[in-house]
Length: 240
Figure 1 (tube, rainbow, N blue to C red):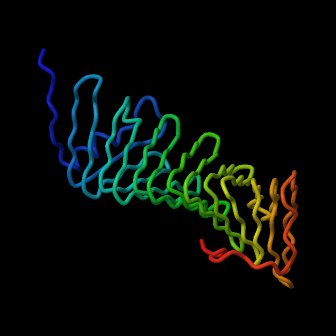
Figure 2 (figure 1 turned 180 degrees about the vertical axis):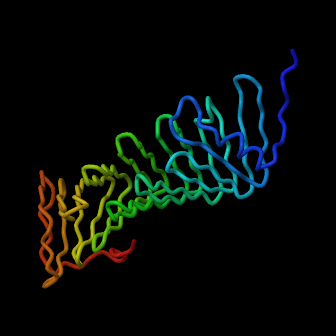
């Protein structure tokens, strides 16, 4: 029997076909775009959305220049070009260059310049590489990591952000800035709710007199003692 070839669908027709809930998911799944190309070869089904591509899966909405849907019940999404995602239930806003999303596992991977706004905890995370496990609400970020939270800003090369516990763990030359004070250590742990800072290993600090700082506790563990107040901060120490 001849296998059906790939074909193009008008975006309105594709949206109508996709709007019906899939058996594997209790959520409604819909998509639209300027141009939609689908291949229905058994075992290799995929649909490519191009030009103002949009997908809505439950409370998650995604916009991108190109979105490819594949897998059983279109459970896998690959989005490229000016990707923007909003999850109203989770309180997340995402901007990235490239997004991979598994709807069944609620797991996403982002690479390229990425900005994630956690509206629930008022935290902004920036990095070049981020994995987000929607089931456990744990994010892992790598490369040029930046964290912003009210008067607190941090940078590192690696971070684990536990949203439910409101705990941020920074390693890889981590630095935290709060109320004009600067903290450096091998590992920095931050409570994003209270903004308390815990320093572990090779602790160093620069405190600004009269800043009202002192919200950090240190554990040198063989490292350097905290720097005395008034120590000059490195050039560019306040950059974000």
